[in-house]
Length: 132
Image (cartoon, rainbow, N blue to C red; front, top):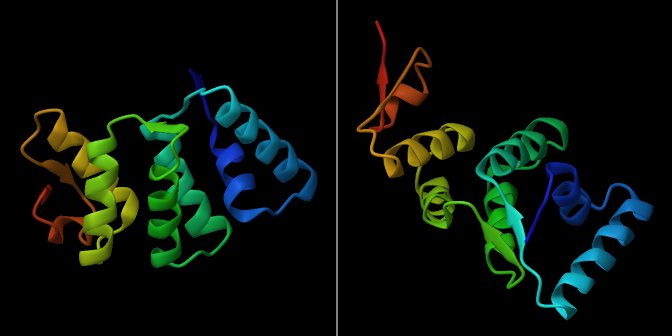
């Protein structure tokens, strides 16, 4: 199994560098042909959310849809897929920052009952608690 860095996923999704995008497409086709699995760590998913939102000004819906499309690719395996599925679900039903959702959902799957924060917006979500 081979892990993917954020910039690989950005080239795949945004296609902002034609040359690199072609290389990524070719590599994905090779993985498909050879039945290889490509791995996306949670930290890469978190960074992908940030890059798509902050650098490429993608809408929330575009980010959620992009992540969902990645989950449907047979050659892709996410670390903690259940966390990613919860991110997609909550990303469509709440307005909480997607990065915060990923953090809180990851924490819950690791046995935490909540995440303490100074972020007032995040603290509106049930899995966060405002530290005062």
